[in-house]
Image (cartoon, rainbow, N blue to C red; front, top):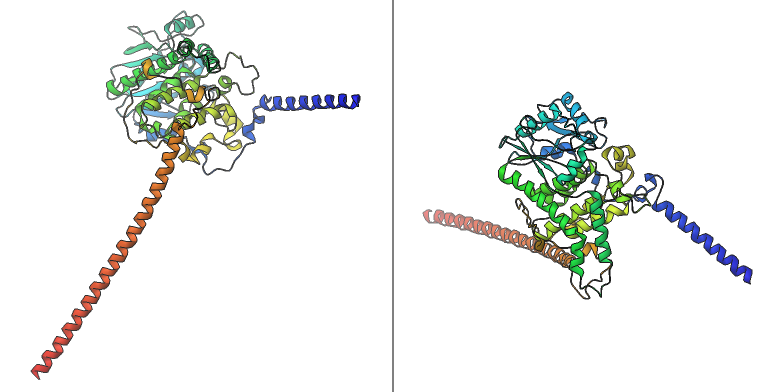
Length: 502
């Protein structure tokens, strides 16, 4: 009996070890093709991989072909393996002139157009220039920025360069052969440089970890909640990003000035800012489809390193390359949705759903680091897009208070207008209010009520159409009968007249 129980315990431990090894293999597979996204293929009504097409997007923006052109210089990812294959550059700049610029900009990420505003101003993005301690120049790079400035027919007087980094960080990078544009009387003429003081990925990672520690702290001992929240600096970082986005938006919207945005390599802080600015400027990006296009364009095609920043397949949760850059962007969007509840077609549930599947590996949208890697992995044919799921059931993510066509947004960046996204950061650590009606539940109730009223209106309209049809038919019948009666009376009168004459 003792031996059998001992054997049973050994067998149970063996099973547990086998289950652990299998879970470990599934969670941290050696190859990305072993992730769940490559096996999870639900049948859906729409194909989310068709949401974004760069040529269609630039046509929608009505970019003048006399000023800008699409180049295929990176079609095989030879100039920059982190850029998309098609790039929009000034029409007066040839592909040959772009090649030395790729050598001068970090990772070959040259200045390219990503957004053309209705007033002629534009947003371009790039990586930092490699000037180094010797203050190396690249005449072709300077000429390219001159052409970007001149492509603004409304106000070609000045090009604004926004370096997302703190100035001290940019200066420190010169020691590593990198740096920033030195505006002098002979270099980068008619340009102005501003630093936006957004911290790097390591600072953001530590800040978010402090937020999660705070959210997991004791519910009963919360007297220092606000001071502890302040010590995380999370809202301070959100404030800086929104403040920078608002500043750029004002220059584009009110002064018609074109801008170039970059950070170090141009794939973290840069898409945070360029995405937010486009969201504030253009109502299209505040729709469900438009927001999906924005993410595809600014984050996925331009090489935000989702694989490294999220840490798919990486068991080292303290990896220095992990950072909540995309989460931070979505948080900024949520702050805008909260301040402008009628200006976004989508609800907070839509944003939360995107973040949930940023980490879930259910879908292929956020896998890999670059467009090149996704193309080589053929994910459009081997996985399902997250947008397929959303666009197959749009009603679940719509904002019932949405008013289409609102103009440029200027969110308030003061601390009293910013708050922690409790429904996201604290949803597992704080119990929901008992018998409380949440905003999502109320939205769902309103959507259901709207659908019911819409159906009832349709039913009443059909009944009204039937009544009108019946009334028209009765009127026509009465008129026909009256005409027939009049004809009969006329005939009888004619016959009577003939009799009298006889």
